[in-house]
Length: 386
View 1 (tube, rainbow, N blue to C red):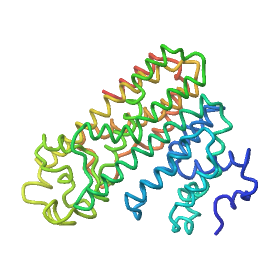
View 2 (view 1 turned 30 degrees about the vertical axis):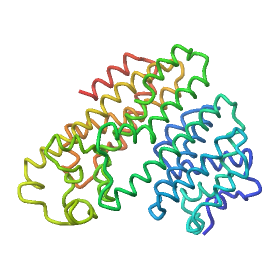
View 3 (view 1 turned 45 degrees about the vertical axis):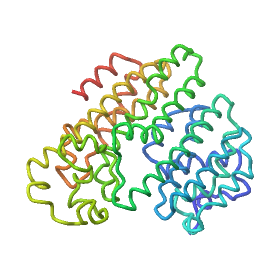
View 4 (view 1 turned 180 degrees about the vertical axis):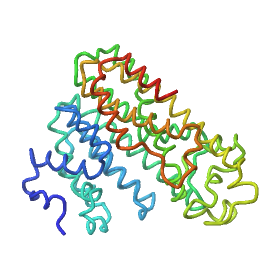
């Protein structure tokens, strides 16, 4: 079976210029339909810079997520990737060194989009040099910073999983994790939005910078809430232990007794598939307590969403596409938090709680009509929030 490039009728020798951009657009749709919707509403240099930033971060994330690599190997490969972006020249030898360090098994799976993208780093990286420095520099900076953060948490996760589960002790730990995977993206957006229009003055940009990390955290915390049961199946829980203890759980993974597909080492958590202890899992009190835990995280998501809405309103209202880029994921996250409510809905069914396609279509339709009106945005968000 040919890889994505062959399917598109592109040979290695022609993957420059328009062909390279076409590959980037094509692979985006394959590695993320959700973000592709938002990114593709943008145009021009802003579209290109955010497209490339997403692809670079997806490459780093693919390395960090690989279940077969040890953390020390991930750290080395992520450093090689970061090295590419420490120079505005984006040197070819650095790109080659990174690609050469990727696992041989990835080459055998080159038809899979994530691996295809990583193995064609040499296609997407040079495109950044086509953009003005005011766009390119923030993309380089965020890629380097995220690689460092991912390497740090890869080592922490490996150490934790060796003895049981990966958990986070405090809300501060959660904020740090969310910062590296999403908060710094908020910082990137502010720089790119300001580069794209003279209507964002230095003073307005400074106001946006007070909120941009929270913009990223809003989407990440909402995803953590929505995906917590799926995460538990791989012995990962991003719900801070300190919140869980407030509601009578010794550890965050105690909320998933009998649900997780695997379990920590003996003595640190219940065995996989074991029956819950009497009076714990399955009891009304147990359900109430774990709903209360998730309810706290839902409220944290709402707090960041408040900031994210304020951030979006600082974008000049004539910048329709930029506002829609922000409004779509924010209202989708808000609608998901509305469905989850006090947290109990997460555990009420085996099915994942998520909004319908019709709701997504309604969000797109209504925001396209009213994107310019701060009053409408406030009113609509208040409807969802209450």
